[in-house]
Picture: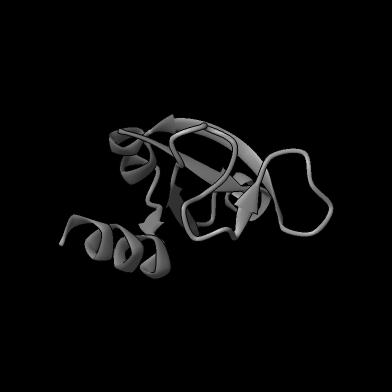
Length: 71
């Protein structure tokens, strides 16, 4: 599964990763979007395992959203 990170994760001091929507244009929670001025700017799209290796934590809103859609 691919995830998306915001620019604040680029510093390497931890942060959050967000679940990527089906169109690969934004996070499912809407916090991070590519090419927009109104949401967090995307840093990179990468595999979930790589994000976790970098010490990033999952976004709680994305996890809640994913759990809601699974039920």
